[in-house]
Image (cartoon, rainbow, N blue to C red; front, side, top):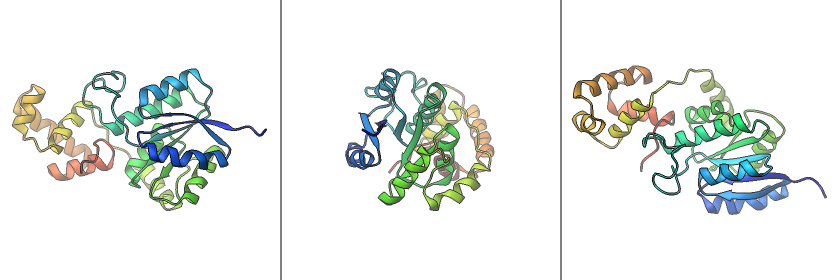
Length: 230
């Protein structure tokens, strides 16, 4: 019997996992575990032989509120940041494991952060099944970054640009702004002075190259520092 590549899927999209599993099987990839949350997925990885990990771009912060301190240490971690940390964690502790991120968008800046975190490839849900399979094959053969053809050049262009560095406090302020809070309300929530919040926002705008609240939130979201809200 030919060797099957053992893989796990970390995704809260159960329909996607159910549909992709038989496709992977025909490609010689055996899905041995599916987790809807990051923590149990990593627990399985610690105790089983796995060669390939699929992880959704956006994951719940924890199975139960306050349960997962490792990935929500400050109470302000975004779902996207958790996935970036998880990818980096897997690459550090399991260097031979291939990691493929699964995303619903094709924003080059967000995809660039996935690759810089350590993802070998990116599967875009809007792409065709044939292109998805092509990305998976390229990632397994060691071709990195393995991404859909339409994303390849924009991704390379984005990887050549520096990604802004925001602190956890910067992200916290941006999340409150995204939710529509005033500077005064943010100061009360964070427990600092109004002047401190204003100064921090000025520094955030300089880091992002933004003018004003709307552009700052938009750019921070494009880079994956904030989750999309609909």
